[in-house]
Structures are given as C-alpha cells and as structure tokens.
Length: 105
Length: 392
Image 1 (cartoon, helix red, strand yellow):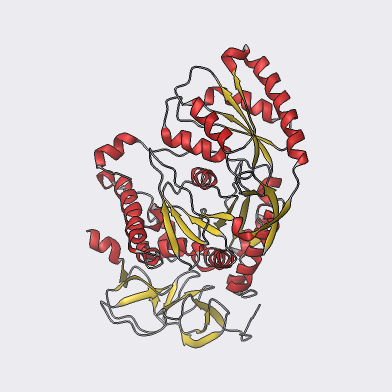
Image 2 (cartoon, chains in turn red, cyan):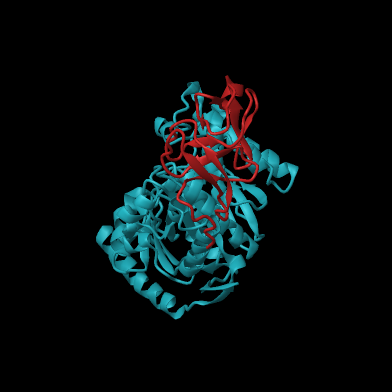
C-alpha cells in the first residue's frame, strides 16, 4: 500500500496517465484546490482549482480542451468537447458528446 | 503458483466437489430439488425454456454438468421431453464424470424417483468423500468476471481493481472470461486493441455489433445508458463501457467464445482473456461461464448486488465504502479504500487475487454462506436471429 499524499485537499483520481480528465472522489466546491492523484499508486500528479461545483464521481478537466477535441479517460476517447473546456471545469454532457451515438445518428 | 483442488479425469481441476442433480426439463425440477435437499454438497438445477430440443440449452447443461466443480451427476428425465436426453448422458459419461439417471415415467412416479435419487446421492457422497484436494497449478484456473448493481464507484474502484487481479491471474497462467457483449458497446476499440490477431479483432467487433442489432430492433435500445448513469457522472456510453470492461484487465484477448445453435466454445488452456458471446444478465452469464469451464466468478457491484451460483463460487467485490459497511455480510472484498484514500488500486487488486486463491483452496464465500445458488440458462430466439440475418 502506498499512500503518497498526506495533505488535506479533496482528491480527484486520474485513471490513466494520458487522461485529460480526473474523477472527483468527493463533492468539490467551486474555487476549491484539488489534489489530483494517479489511480494506480495514489501519487499526486498536481493541484488544480475547481471552476465549478463538481459532484462525487463526476469529471474535472485537467487541462484546456478545445472544442472538437478528444476527452480522454482510461487512455481512451470517451467523447468530443462541444465547446472550449478550461482546466478545472466540470466535464459532462453539457460540454462533451458521445462520439459513438453521434456517429449512429 | 499453486492451489489445492479436485483433480478430474479429463485434466481439469475443481475448486468445489458437488453432486449435481439436473432436471433436464423443468417439470422434474421439484424432484431434483427434493433429492438435492438430503445432502449439503448436492445442488439441483434445471432450465426454463420448455422441453423442446434447444441446442444452446442442451450444450449449456452438458457444459455445466462437466464443470470441474462437479464430482458426479444425477440426471432426472421425465420420459417424454423433446430435449435430447441421450446426448446429455453420452456427453457427460464421456467426460468421465460419474452419472446416474432416473426416468420418472419408468421408475413409477415422483415418490419412487425421489427415493432412488436419494440412494444415488448416498452412493455419490462416498465417491466425493474419497476425493481429496491435491496441489494444482494456477494455470488450471478459469475465472469469469461480471458486474452489476453499478454506481459511480464501479468504473473508478471495483472494476479497475478486479482488472488488476485479472492481470495477476493471467500472469500466473490463468484464464479470464469477460462476457456482457452489450455492455462492451462503446469500448470496442479498447477490446480490439488487445486482440492477439486480426481474426479475433473482427470477432470481437461482430459479437458486440450483433448484440447491438438485437437490442436495437425498432430502435428500442433500453439497456445502454440510464438516468442514474448520467446522474452518477457518466457522460457517454464509451465512458460507461470502458469502466465496465476494465475488470478484464489489460492482457491479450486470445479469442471470442461463440454461443450459438451449433457450438458452445470453450477457452483453450492458454493464459489470457477470452471474450464470451451471450448475455449481460447475471445468472445466465455466470451459467455460460460455468458451462465453458470457469470454476469461479468475480463480481463487482457498487450499490450492492447479492447473487451467487449453483456451480461456481461467487466472490462479491464492492467499490462503495458505504455499501461495504451496510452490506458487509454479503461482500467478500471491499474496494472502497480506493475512494476513501486508504488503499491504492494495486493493493486492492492484490486483495482480490488473494481472495481468488483462498476461495480456490476451499474458503467459503459470503454468497455460499448466505445460501445463494442462482441458476438460469440463456438461449437465443432463433426466429430473431433469422429475421436479422445474424449468423453468430
């Protein structure tokens, strides 16, 4: 067991090193500093500030994601940004779209 | 790495030593159940698709009866069913599993059939008690992975942790079976990227797309994304599917196991992942895994699913720290530490792998303690297959 981070900040989990989103491990408040950890060994990747209230299990952007570019979780594309997403933004159906169902339509 | 199991004649190794009482059609089920009641190590199963000769049903029952966890088989036959009873008897006998059969109409009715069945149980208990656990290599283990009762923790904690355990098992020589073709919809690339060759890649795509076509007749797609998924933070079907198939780990996918009216394909004895066609419905999916030789199923839940299986022990993993507390009597491994920050993914993965080895050595799971013996048989409506032109 390696628990590398001892600070009191709330946590978000980056599931894979290539991901541009992380998952909130508790409810995050707008303006709050968040510690982003790797899921494999919980090492702190960096600290970012939440731009929105983000519920447990929801996603926070780890970098700016331009419109029409890939949102990546588990190293794989989970959708496309439909508007400019900034680092710290809540990432969900209001700013990304499923490429899969999109293609089927 | 080794475990202690029951060596079978055909080379496979069981982790339980059960007497299977199988009613080939459900009219005989109460007889089978009453026979199985007389012994702790006896279990009754049947199928509920009528007594016509459905090859998927027949092959599944043959597969389950020859599962390594089965020490002997008592088959209950009414005497007028359409299901091919002699094919069942021949196939099971050929596997080397001791078998006795009772034809109710010839035996003289229910009471006599039950009495005869109980005598067979005694006879088979003697055989079973003479069989002892012997050391076997972990490369004899075939483990099915399944999820259900999902919440936001499944894709972050439970499934990735089982994925780590799947990798450990495969690195030790074992086989992992992933099922749920419809739930893989959206994660095709992740699975196809892991295929060992182009043929397997093509097969993975076909299985998922065929299931998509069946589920989407008249655009009735109902089981893909629900409101709760969105509320929980999942934004797309890709995200949900990736979170689900993660439980199969990251190792190579060696093949697709076909389930159709001519074949119920079994994994070869090579370390790696096999993707099984069939269904996402838990008891049926577990039965299909058991029918191709899985000795054990690892299940992941968040909300707290309680299930089990008549033939394969069921390890219940839960990723929600709250559910781990409220339903602790049902949960074997808590992955909730990944959420609360007390445990890393790798350490929970190790916990699950350890539990797999302990249960293989004979440790009883929560689901076994609680008396879960779910059993249900999957089949396909051949008319739908024909209408859609699906040749699976």
